[in-house]
Length: 133
Ligand SMILES: [Zn+2]
Image 1 (spheres, helix red, strand yellow):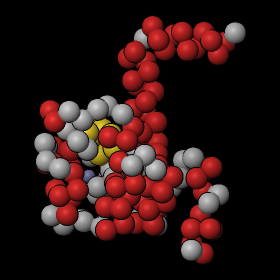
Image 2 (image 1 turned 120 degrees about the vertical axis):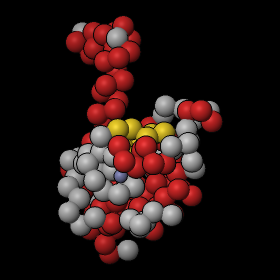
Image 3 (image 1 turned 90 degrees about the vertical axis):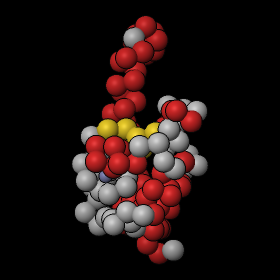
Image 4 (image 1 turned 60 degrees about the vertical axis):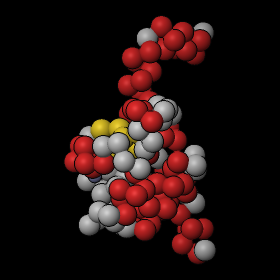
């Protein structure tokens, strides 16, 4: 079975799985920084690893190097509120992301950035509902 082989391969190669996971995180936002909308070049731990933050999808957001470096070990939402590019819709998106509601997070990001291109068409289907609400 090919599917079983793939799972086995991933278990053997955690690095491969990690790479796939990182790619999928960037794909959620169309490779744009969740904070400022610039191209995301890194994965930011919202709760820093130094404070016990886990490398889970809920705690990891796509970020550009500038935001990631500037934020450092600070609480992401407090840090974000002080930024010039602060957008309450993005702040809501970050909160939704942390709660594991990626669908809502992506819709909010889309709202914040009209040029946002959805790479996953399944998310696009709900768009009309969102606009009507
Ligand atoms: Zn950024």
